[in-house]
Image 1 (cartoon, rainbow, N blue to C red):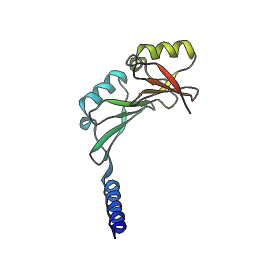
Image 2 (image 1 turned 135 degrees about the horizontal axis):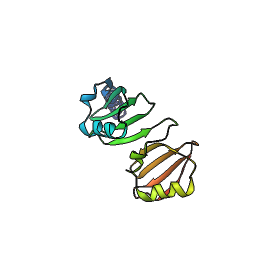
Image 3 (image 1 turned 60 degrees about the horizontal axis):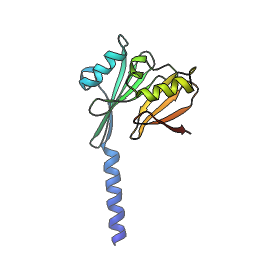
Length: 148
């Protein structure tokens, strides 16, 4: 009997989580102000083609698609979480937001490669390069390894 109650409870909770997932298209004015400022600062004059708000339970995040091929993920509070150029170099103005030691490592180790994606992670940063290599850095910008 206890097993049956456990499985019924587990199934009900799993169903609730799936039912709470929701994606919807929103307008620019529905983005947090800090997200709008980030886009206006680093992608001046670039048209937004779509904004998707994803709600998963109480968690909300946003993905903004730009006409130049970039997409940017923002957290619920509006802070950027991921900038993906899909093989296009990330704007220099965004690179200045990274720790100086990370940029120095990139300049000395990979001088001929571009950063095409930046993911902010709990441990620091994951940097995608134009040769499809992904590098890991801690929050201080210290190189910690290559992501396979």
